Amino acid sequence: MNLATRAAFMTKARHDIDKALLQLNEVSTHLTDDAELAALGALSGLSGQIQYIETVLTIMRDLQTHQDWAERRKQE
Image (cartoon, rainbow, N blue to C red; front, top):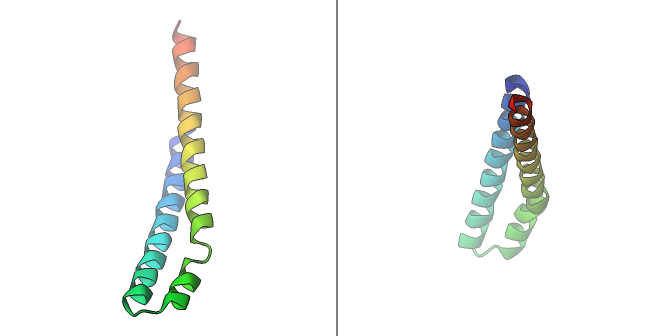
């Protein structure tokens, strides 16, 4: 994976993590205010966002592992 592609994926992942953090802060505020239903609403979609981030990072790790392996193989 070239550096520009990696940087683009990392920027997207950081953006999505920031969005998830904002959502978690909203959930925390609702729970502090004893507004359980509002907290549930704020949680909506959060697990999907986290799963997406995890998938992107896992793919990036696997691609890097494969590239490292291919590079070592080429040097043999």
